[in-house]
Length: 377
Length: 207
Image 1 (cartoon, helix red, strand yellow):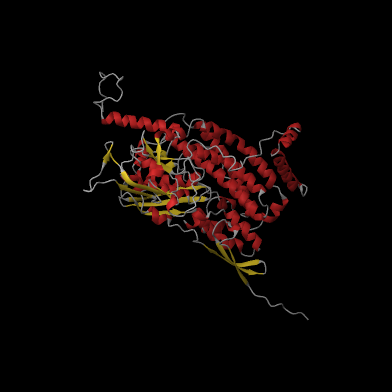
Image 2 (tube, each protein chain N blue to C red):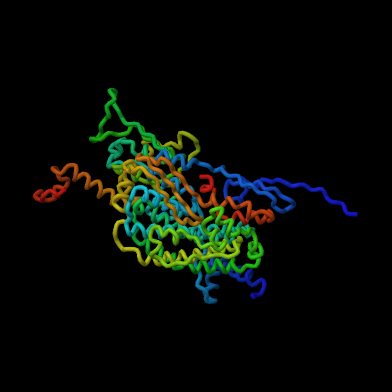
């Protein structure tokens, strides 16, 4: 005679102080044994009123706050806002400024993807070693950022019309040396991780996201491309000077955690190609910022764009980062909205986690690549 | 199909190589087997050793004075106070009993100039917007204090630093600032050339 064991669902709260949630993020999970049957993300612990503050200060004064959105890729965030302001005010960009901005944005992509890969492996239980290898390389790029902008993470460097000040003498040679040596690190990193049987066991077939759901939920960035959808704003929109460079968009096929990891590795290799071309093509002299941009940077209150709105978007390391600005003719924006990729990508978390184990949700969250500064703003 | 376990083994090889790179003898071993090692030690033992920072490294603003501390460049125009994103600057202009601004060296000056270290985020907006190059970024980063309130507010006396100090920490930027100030001075007083050696017969520049 068989007797059924009485069981009931267990509700647990992962976070907000859990080290694997990458910040103050909470997942209210309902478990059947070890299996997730329901998962509700709770956000808002790091809400800092970024958009409301942006509406009460001048356009330029918002730049330091954008650094703190996705604090791993400050330069990209600056670039997004700069592009939106340029559209709104019709500000031309200097030639050299364009190149410096693209170099910075692609270096940021290297920083972000290197770090997030390290974090993902850390979440799987390989404590320390791969993460610190990643951070060792990241430090070298942060040194370059420090030499150019004065700060390692909170750069506040890109301005409408170009960059705040030109890169120091010898900086481009240093950058070239780093970029040329980067594939060597990637080879080593891949030797450490890509073919590792344990990592493949943990990641392949875990957290599968279907193409249809990814498109319907407006997921962007490496997460979308891991499902096999060829959508990269650098190609689709062709903003800044990206059409001048030859590069490919790496695509995954399965849409699982492994594909998301591998798409990021391949994207870094493409970024290195873009950087090599940009460092070769950059004009030797010329202003790093257009005269109009310089005037705005010096006196932010004189910048009163005509009534209207603008949406500037870039392919940030995490996905489509958009800034929507509405001007009413005053020095402050009437409306300032940030379309944060981490936040939108997080909306499919439950769909990816259903039916998976608790340990898998941690790496699924790690593979989404969120930064809470951007999720909560 | 690769043999199961080779991926793990090649990964351990990378770890072992990095382990050897962190020791001098390990680097010798790597060189003898024909692998070009890199210096694996990338961290320094703070606070015994301090990292060398880039020249542009910025942390917390200070007020510049020329020659003597009472000859500060700030005229209390409050542009930085208005533009500061986290609003950590507080300025009150020096005024006499009738409420008229007091002038010193031909300029108005601040009576109170406070910056709150606990709020300042070292973004450099104040430096960018200052029309008089009166505020510049410092590079000292050990600002912790035992008190929570008064010690963290830097008043005018603690913020004042000399122009020579500015030249010593940011020589490149200081040269640009000096050039800009000289151009401004020449423009303000074209009748009285600041350099007696300059030829007075030169025609005034066309505007």
